[in-house]
Length: 136
Image (cartoon, helix red, strand yellow):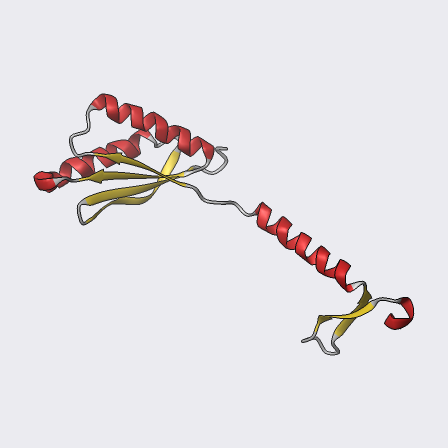
């Protein structure tokens, strides 16, 4: 039947009982499959991670400036990773870094929620904040 019509016989699902086949133009079939895959890929949401860095002795003005940037990032739909980096002997003031990050989380409370609480990894303490749903 396919040869009479000048088309191809394409097996749609080989695992079915009996196997399902279709009489179609194979090149058109492949094109439509590619198009569907491209649409699905375009609809998926890409997660963007923005990082904001602090020192353990960050001043109030710098803190507020970075807080405003983080609010903008969350409103765009990006995740924000806040990091406090300890240089030299400043690792002694771990609690300062943790207080700074918790204060940062408190400032972002209405724009996003904390995904990962402050965690110390070597000389860096980091925290992850994700945007609240429906805030785009």
